[in-house]
Image (cartoon, rainbow, N blue to C red; front, side, top):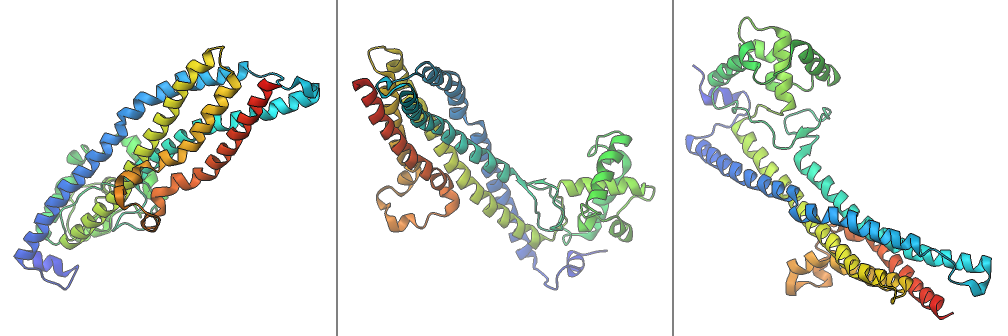
Amino acid sequence: MDTAAEVHADHDDVHYTDAERNAMRGFLQRCEVRISTQHRIATAFIGGAGLLLLIPIFFRDIVDGILIVLLQTIGNYFASLGVAGGWITSLVLFALLVYPFFLSLAVPLYSLYLMLKDIVHFYFSLYTPGMPNNVLNPSFSLTGLAFPEDESGRVRRAVNRFQYDTENSNYMIPFSEKRRGQYFDQVIEDTGGGIFPAARRPDHLYETGSLPPDVDPRHAARVSAAFGLARSVGRTLVEEVAVAEMLLARNNMYLRRLLLRYVKTLLMFVWTTLLSFLMLPFLGDTRFPTLLVLAVSYVVWSIGVMPIVGTPFKWIYKHRYSRDEAKHIDQQLTLLERNIAPFARLSVVASLVALVMSAAAYLI
């Protein structure tokens, strides 16, 4: 009869007491609750009710409305400079207005792109502790779970025999025989068998008597590949505790970045949408010069974009925010600000020059 200590001795020379094992089991239960909470948080922001509401309005009303106005206002506003000089100067003016217009569209969309990338990184990973690092088949970050190898070798073998029984395993790989061959055999071939978790390699299963006596070796390999795709890696109890701590830390790092990016993305859409809605009535009123309205609006947008993006950190730091403490913010959290800052500064300059030129166009 196998004891936990005897099975564990194959993996580690340390023999843990029952109290230590119970402490690890209790810790794993708490980890499962915390991991579940983290995934509920991520799921809530994937829905992104605020973004789902603003994005259709943003593209349907704002982009079309302002773009139509820009196209309708194209003309020679500097006729006194001659035909060639007037058109060249007018085109420069329009280019200076078009730049902040497209930037006001690009910044929210770029922020949305970064947020979607964070969601993919949160849910997927190329690496799993216990799997070869050269197996780069993407996997769900919340991996499968296997009964710890050092708890009971007899239980582990009984579980394996049940799982690899052909009738039972159909539940896990519900494909036709032809499609199983096309899918799992190809994965096994492409990874050189690296997709098999170490404890589920066919030779190991046969050596330990973990397979039903009449199982087809090809079928057993496909079942092992399925467990590998799910990253159901056999680990000891200590290794499960270690991986649970690593997963909690990983989720925490991605979640803090994801949620900050969500807030920044929402603020960018709100800022651009609000300013555009305020701009559109003035653009539709013939009493207000169109070019001046556009120039003034984009001066305001360009000046406000960087403070708006930095608002979440102001909320976090409250009265403690200072230049020295700002250095403690890691670069992954400020990627959006750093990438758009040069373009925002250029937009301020472009919109201010456009403001001067548009005022001159109406005075000439």
